[in-house]
Length: 277
Image (cartoon, rainbow, N blue to C red; front, side, top):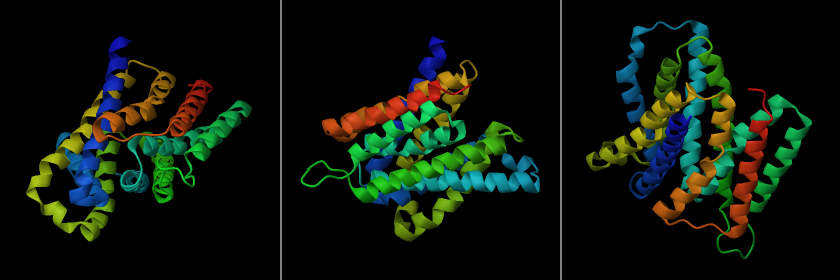
C-alpha cells in the first residue's frame, strides 16, 4: 500500500508543480498561450505512445470523445485564466467545487448536503472583502469555479467514453481534442508565444509534469488501491497546491482563506467517505 500511496502523492506534486511552472510562463505567453503549449505537447506525447490513428471509432464514441475532450480543454483554459488572478491554492480549492457538487448531486444522501453547506462556507470565506489587502479577485474566482464546472463534465463524459474504449485511448484522443479547442484562444491572444522557440522547453516541461507523468503514476496507483482510497487522498490536492504556491510562487494566503480551503477539503473528504465505492 505504501508504494501506490507514494505514487499518488508524487503525481499530485507533479501536477501542482506543473501549474506553478505554467504560471511562470504567463508573463511571456499568457494563460491561453501556456494552456495551448501544455495541451499541444501533452497531445503529441500521448499520440506517439497510443497511436490513435490505428483505431476506428463508432459514431457514438466519437461524440463522447468530442464532449470529453472539449470539457478537458475548457477546464484547463478556465483554470489557467484563474491562475492569472488568484493564488494556486485558492484556484485548486475553488475548482474542487465541481466534482464535489457532482458527488453530492449523484449521491443524494442527507449527510452529503451537510458537506455541501460546509463547502459553501468555504466559498463564502474566500469571497472578496472590502479593505482586505489579500482579498481574492472575483473574476479569478469565477474562472476557477468555471474550471470546476468543466471538471464535473470531464468526469461525466470521461466515464461514459471509458465504458466502451481503452482508458489510454480516451485520454489520448481527449487531449488532442482539448488542444484543438484551446488553440484558437492561444493564437488570438498570444500568437507569438506559440512560435517562440525559447518557450518550447518550458511548454514541454509543463506537459510532462501536468499530464504525462502524473497520469502514468495515477494509473499505476489505481491498480493497487480502491477508488474510495484514491478519492480520499485526492482531497489533499488543495493543501499541496497551497504549499507549492507558497514555496514556488511566493504566494501567501490569509488565515481566513486557509480556513476556507480546509472547509472545502473536509467537505470533499466527507463526501468521499460516504460514497459506496
